[in-house]
Length: 371
Ligand code: GTP
Ligand code: MG
Image: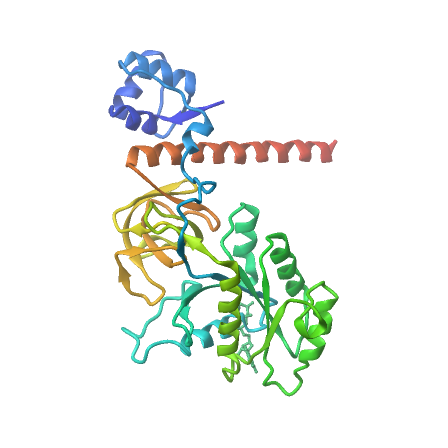
C-alpha cells in the first residue's frame, strides 16, 4: 500500500501541515506532522483542499533519471576508473599513496589532503589522468556491485609477493570476473627478502588468472610501494589497458554518478564522496542519491581544494545533502526541488516498506523456529 507523511503531503500541495492535521481531525483522527497516512486518505484530503490528485507509479517517479541506454552523445574521451583490490595488508593503500606522491606537485597547496579513498593521478608520460578508488576490505565495492552500480573500468589486483594469493585475493578476482572488468596484477612488496613473485603467478593460475609469462593475457607488474619500484610501469600498463577500452563520455549534460562513501561529519554535515560518471556536477545543482536529496553547497577535490564543478571520472566530496546517502547509491541531478522531493520521498517510503517486510519476514521465520 502506498503512503505519505503529513509533512510531505502538505509540501506537495504547498499547504500548511497544520491545515492537513486539522482536516484529519475533522474526520476524527489525531495525527502528528510526521505520521504516515495511506494514499486513499491523502487523496481525500488533497481533494477537499481543492487539489487535483495524480497518483504516480514507480516507473513514473524514476523515469528519465538515468538514461544510460542512450549513449549516443558519449563522444569525448574520459579517464579510466581503477579500483585497487586485494587481501588485507597486501599494500593497496601504500601503493596508492606511492602513486600519488610520485605525482604530487612540490609544495602541495595547504599540505592537507583529505582521505576520501578516491584520487586522480596523472601519468608521467602522457599527463593523462587515471582515477583510483581504494577499497578497505573492498566492502564498498561489494555494496556497489550488489546494487548494480558499475563504477570501475579496470581492477588493479594487489598481491603481496611474500604472502601470495589469499582469500580476499580470490574474492577480488571473482568480483572482477563477475563484473567483466579487466584485471592488472600488481605483485607488491618485491623488496622483501622472502618475496616469491613466481609463486604468486602460479597461484593466480589456479584461479584462472593467467599472466602473460604463462601464456595468458593478464598483465602483471612487480612493484614495491615501499621503494617506489616500477610504479611508472604500472601506470603505463593501466594507460595501455584504458586505451584498449576506448572510454567515452559526455560532459555536457546533468551529472550522473555513484556514491563511493558517505558520512555525517560533525562540522560539515552529510558528506558524500561521489564519482561523477557522466555529465558535470556543479555547485548549486539539485541532487538525489538513494533516499537523500540536497543542493550542492560545495565540491571538494581529492587535493582538498574547493572546486566549482566536477566532470566525468572525477571523484569529489559533495556537501549539501540533507542526510548521508549510502555507498553504491546512484547520484542524479534533477531539475527542481519538487522533483527531488518526489523521488526521495517515494524511495524513502519503498525503503521503509522493504524494512518492514524484512522484519515481518524475520518474525515469520522466528515463529517457525519456535514451533
Ligand atoms: P587494508 O586496507 O587493511 O586491506 O590494507 P592495505 O592493502 O591497504 O595495506 P597497507 O597499504 O595498509 O599496507 C600494509 C602493510 O604493508 C603496511 O605496514 C605497509 O607499510 C606494508 N607495505 C605495503 N607495501 C609494501 C612494500 O612494497 N614493501 C614492504 N616491505 N612493505 C609494504
Ligand atoms: Mg588500505
